[in-house]
Image (cartoon, rainbow over the protein chains, first blue to last red):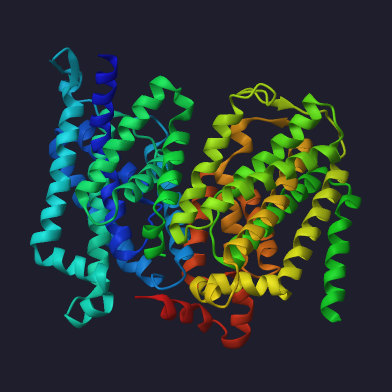
Length: 285
Length: 313
């Protein structure tokens, strides 16, 4: 029974992890930027929802679209006017500049919002369902469902719309996409904005199941990275699945091996996966 | 000739700093010299082959713990402690490098990301390493001696890099950076070269860790295996000029000074400015300060805009 409950908790948290990694994987796959500021976007999204909820009394789930819109705008502007300037320089430089952005956003958040822990705590936060003797926290379930819905939405946008086709074409071959009339500067900015919007949504949900501080970004970036690699960069559902796997592994490791080892285990697993699947890593070298 | 004279003067001037007798200055100096060594060590793999390692903080931690265990638990002398730390780090570099260095690009960087956290978790569960609590080393008040040791180490690391830059070994590393498949086709055993570079890098990093441990006299897992330290190595090397002999030193000295000055006055704003400096540096001088100096001589302030023009979408 304990095992089943642990698996359930891991599953619910893992869906959220998957959503978090979606934005990173999208940007990585299309722009070939590993965005080290991704966790900071998640953090900012968390604050957006928190202040809409605590300041204006908006229901946190209703506040999600607003947070996504704000983060889309931020991502769009950053890519259009900063990252596009260096996108063709060495790969290392994109890592470095997004790291710099991460530092800037983290400390701006500390100045603006202070280092206090914030939790988005709506009236229904404590509600539970009991199914077959398992406790199912409603808020976490809702966050899980919202994560799945957003992943599906992304899939539909990528597969069925003009924008999605342009994004996929650019990911495959920038020059060819350009010849077919795609404006890469704009498309890159839109894609980066979409990644930031997904991060923002994940941040809002994260604030409901955990706490938001200015410093949560770094570990969330690392986690998103692990999940993006595990799930592959092409398929949103693969990434959600990767998130669920990591969520379950962490939950199991925390109980059976000890909480100090959770990060070590997810990274150990990552190394094993990377080394065991060399063809993939060679292809995108 | 002139260059050699200038270099000798710089070394003499640095070596003479403890004579001024300013204790705070000496302590800043030790920090800056050790950081420069770390940036230089990172440069051996990161700058020359383009493989971004986030595992160097774990070599640092192994150097710290090798020295600390040897001195605090086994009561061996400092020199032996350094050797133990270096041996641990080199062993780890070889063991870890063989599977990991087959990965390329981002994948290598990320695979190394977890090493520090993993080692910290292991160390925190070993009795002889003092578990979570850490170890206390014998106290010596000899900042001037630590300063000269750090300087010697930096000179050794820089001499090694200078040799690499001129040698066949270095040419092979650069070939790997420019096009690894082409290097393979040319008959370079890329894996062996990469492991050799990682091992050298680990060696200097571990010695720097050992010196720092003995100087500070206290070690704990969180402080020893600190990923932000690794990030600082990368930034200093990148800021100065990766793949050059003196770029990483320049980057380390300038950023250490900037950071110390800012941190003593305004801490949050210091970190903020640090981030901004990185962003602007990547945009305007993507090949580092060392290249900026040459670029300015060629084309003046236009150099900055040329960088944007060359790398924008």
